[in-house]
Each structure stands twice: as C-alpha cells, then as structure tokens.
Amino acid sequence: MSKLPGVTPFPEELAARYRELGYWEDNPQGRYYNDVFATHGDLVAMVSGDDRVTFAQLKERIDRLALHLLELGVAPLDRWVVQLPNVPEFVYLYFALQRLGAIPIMALASHRWTEINAFFELSEASGYAVSEKLGDFDSSQLIAPIREAHPELRVVLGAATIRQLLTRKPSLEQASLDRVEVDPEEPCILQLSGGTTGVPKLIPRTHNDYVYNTKAAVAVNDVRPGDCLLVVLPIAHNFPLACPGISGFFVEGARVVLTESARADDVFPLIERERVTHLELVPALLIRYVNAPSIGGFDLSSVRVINTGGQKLQPEVKRRAEALFPSARVQEVFGMAEGLLMFVRLDDPDEVRFETVGRPVCPDDEIMIVDDERNPVTDGEIGELLVRGPYTLRGYYGVPEYNARTFTPDGFYMSGDLMRRHPSGNYVVEGRKKDLINRGGEKISAEEIENLILSHPAVMNVACVPMPDPVLGEKTCAFVILKAGRSLTLPELTAFLAEKGLAKFKLPERLELTDDLPLSKFGKVAKNVLTKQVAEKLSAAH
Ligand code: OOB
Image 1 (tube, rainbow, N blue to C red):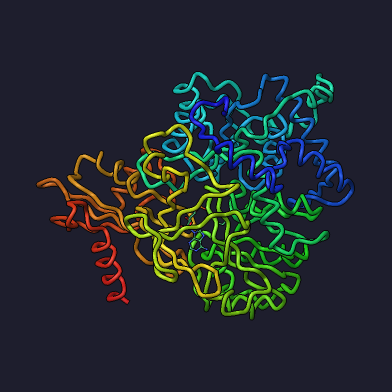
Image 2: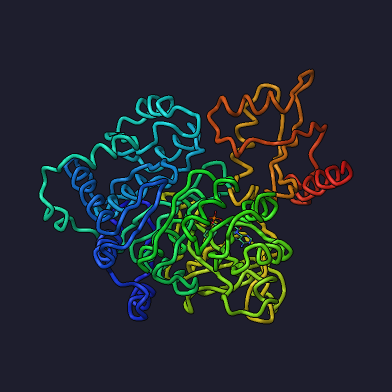
C-alpha cells in the first residue's frame, strides 16, 4: 500500500510474481543510478554545448544537489513540479530527487498557467523547479500567481539557482543521503497523460517498474559502451527520459548529448561532431530531417539506430531515412507514459520493421485486443488494446472514478488505441477510440480545449477534432456554433486561449463556424463526421 493517498498499488500476487521473475529488484532509482554512476567513473556521461561531464562528476553534482535539497527539508514522497528544458540542470535535479525519494512531475517547457496550475492542484507539490526563461517567456510571470494560489509551495528553484547550489559546499555530510529510506514500491515520478478528459491526469510510475522499464528498453535497443544518444525531444517525456533515453544510456556507460534546438541545421552538425549513434524522434522530426536541404552536407554515418514513436510513421519515411542515414536502421517504438513499450527488433525482417510497431519488450506484458463489449476479437481483427504488466500503471493518481472507467476489474489498462495483431506476432496501429489530437506526438485532450473555448462569450457550442497535416500528422480544428449575432475569428479565439494561459501547441489551428454539430445515434457529437469533413476540405483546397 502506498503511503501516498491516491496511488493504486499492484496486487500482492502479481508483485510477488514480478519479483520472482526478476523484473522488480527492490532497488530504488536513487540508489540504482548512484551505483551506475560510480561504476562508469571517468567516462563521459553528458555533453551540453562545450560542457562535458563525466559519470564521476555527475554523481558528485547529484549528491551535492541532493544534500542541499535535504537541508531545505525535501523528504520522500514530496512532489516537485519540474519544468526545465534539455539542460544539465534537469539531469542533476531529476536524479537528486530520485536520491531523496521525492517525486518529480514532468511538466513541459511549453506549459503555462492552465497546465502548471492543474499539476499543483492535483499533486499539492511543495517544490517547483522552472527555468528563468521558457523560450522567450519569462517564468516569473508564472511563479508569482502559482505561489499565490498554492501556499503549500515552499521551494522554487531556477536553473541558475541549481547551478549556484552546485558550487556551494553542503553543510550536511554525505552519509545523511544514505540514511534516506526510499520504498521501491512507491512512485518515483508522475508522468503526464495525454488524457482524454478536461483535466490532465498524472501517471504514477514506481521505482521498481521504472528501473525495469529502462532495462527492458535497453535490451532491445543495441546500446553499447561508447555509444551516444542525441536528446532532442523534450527530456521530460517518458521516451527520452527512460525508454531507454538518458537513463538507459547511463546504465550502459554510454553518453548523452543534450540540445535545446531541434532544428536540422543545429542537429546535423552535432551528430557529426559527437558521432551520435542513436536518435530518439517523433515522426514529425524525422520527416523534417529527411526533407532538410542541408542533409547531404554532413557526415551522418555514425547513426546506427533511429527510434521513432509517439505517432504513426509511414513506411516511406522509414525507407528514405535509411537511405539518407547510411548506417542506420529505423526502429519504431509504440510507447506510452502509462507503461507498455513495444519495439520492433533490429534484426526483424524489413516487412516487420516497416509495417508494424513491433511487440512488447517483456514476456509478461499481457496484451488483449478486444471489441466494444471487451471480448477478445478473432486473431488479426482490429480491436482496442488492453494491457497489464510489470511496468504498466494500475491507476491514474487520485482519480478513482476515472480509473473505474479506464481499467478493467482485473487491472488491465484500456488504452483507447485500436490495433491488430500481424501474422508475425507484431502489432499494427489502426487508429484510436480516445478523444484526443496527436500533434507531432504531443497529445492534446479535445475536451480540455473545448471546455476553455466554451467559456468564450461568443461561443454556444464547440467540438475539437484532428485535421491532417503532412508533417505533424494532426493539428487541432475547432468547429464552433456561435451565439446569435456574435462573430469570432481564429486569431480572436487563439488570443483568448493564450490569455487563459494555455500551452501554445494546444491552440486550434483552424476554425470552422457551423450552424449545428452532427450527432451520433447515442446523441454525442459525431466527431468522425467532422474529422472527415475537414480532411475533405483540406484535400480539395490542394
Ligand atoms: C509516447 O507516449 P505518450 O504517453 O505521449 O502517448 C501514448 C500514445 C499511445 O497510446 C498511442 O496512441 C500513441 O501515443 N503512440 C503511437 C505510437 N507510439 C505511441 N501511435 C502510433 N504509432 C506509434 N509508434 O508517445 C511514447 C512513450 C514512450 C516511448 C515512445 C512514445
């Protein structure tokens, strides 16, 4: 049973099984990675700009920061909202919090008041680490109202404060860190769910499950000592953080290169200079890179593995990428912050690598493909993916009613993804049942945006649906019914939403004014009709 109310534990019986099979080692992340850093000593662990940090230095800095935090009163199970971009301070803080058993909440640099406030409301966090600048946004504009609304917030750290703390000798002795007791069955992180309801959901991942998650991903990703991962996706995402991500590369004594810019003209020179071997991308980035005019001008032959996930990727793009990165194989990942990871295997036949998203990384990932009545479909038919396993959540944080709808009574997570099993035993993504927009891999809950749009004085009703985009896959289109005599333009709508403090990537990119919304036979808005309508309009315009 978790000491943190609102966390659904794994049932005893399964927990015992996961231990027996060696998936769970009862070694909390802080201790586990402390040993990893100690093992690899003088090898380079992390590169950021001209800054090169060895494993020994990484360990020393993490310990030092953890000691300062301990002195500030940070304790096991304290929640921390962390909103730092791809900078070394993220890495120091993430592992320092692990050392203390505190729980980071993985905010994105693009989040604003609406999202950050929701995280504080859900978690009652006592710490907030946020860069002074989030892009060109000055975060003090966010800190002040958050402090005012959340008196339980005690410690706010900027990236500069973290750097300062690292230069100061802690007054507590090293041994005090080893005395912090961390229960490996407790959450080590609260990941964000794409969520399909109005309010974001937090995903508790435990020390036991997250360490295993990373090791299982490493095992299928051909990570060797001396290898190098380029971290170009936002580091807080499950994928670059732990699948295998920075955590997995550290485990193998391999290094990571952090970059805050995802532009091809910044990324290609970095690949060449650092002899990067692994890329973890969303399709939108890979599409951008293979179409970048400068791609022929750089030596990209060091890249062996290109992982892409988060969104469907066309086989054509995979083939082009393998032609342009001459030593690389594209290895698709079907992952989720909730847990389950599927990877194609690097030695799978091309047909499997190009046409499927692979298969689970653990033999005890239990997969079911079911129809609307939750009965298993005939093998090979399309149905909803249900999953249970040693690193998949048992419930979202603090939302029992939502959990009752999202998990089966025997604990399978109902993913909302539509899939079918390929004759090879791998899986193919066929769509989804959940009400979200997948914009370049970032998930946007339609309901969250609709609720905000409904508060606009000119709006009577609204439905947000995905519209196709050649690079991002999907963008948000808002269908709006106006109140009598009112008018609304897209810039007016997005200005209104930005004023509410909504992350920019969630803003609708098209507005369709309409007199009514089509209804399904159950009386709900028939979003599939709207999705089709806007897709047809877009293709007719081409
Ligand atoms: C990753 O995690 P999330 O939590 O942002 O999103 C999970 C959802 C899945 O349920 C599925 O709808 C979609 O993203 N998805 C894919 C996919 N991989 C994820 N849809 C089609 N093809 C794929 N290959 O997106 C994530 C987490 C860890 C590793 C990689 C991706």
